Length: 179
Image 1 (tube, rainbow, N blue to C red):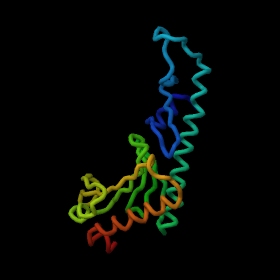
Image 2 (tube, rainbow, N blue to C red):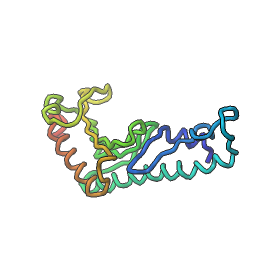
Image 3 (cartoon, rainbow, N blue to C red):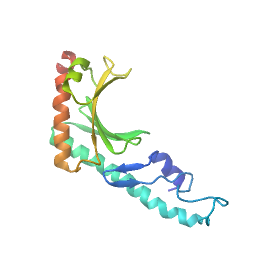
């Protein structure tokens, strides 16, 4: 696979659950130098040595996504894998979303996708409330966990999801609770 294509697929540099993501940009890693920048330029074959680490990083991200799917099942939720240009995650019962953003790959986010009571969300004392035009009622609640500080294992993921679900369900408005 061409390094430029890999760079377009990843779109970020960071660490996810201990896996280093190295982005190869336009066929050249950040550590390589052009002629005239000092040092000896590397041959095109040396660039290919970076590709396995990028592929391994993609595989690590997909393993995190697989773990999220299993954790959702343990919480009796329907899980649907999802990815975009800036994130990789899992939709939960079409009401919630848990993901890793490529911009903040060290954070795992739990997000609501339904109408919430922002006052009730503020009283939780955890998480954040912000507005999105596509969310019914516009207010959205989310909570993150730092993957560098947590021991990311299945038990931890299930516990994190259960806590977030309890909190999210407590701030949903009546229209959502009845649906």
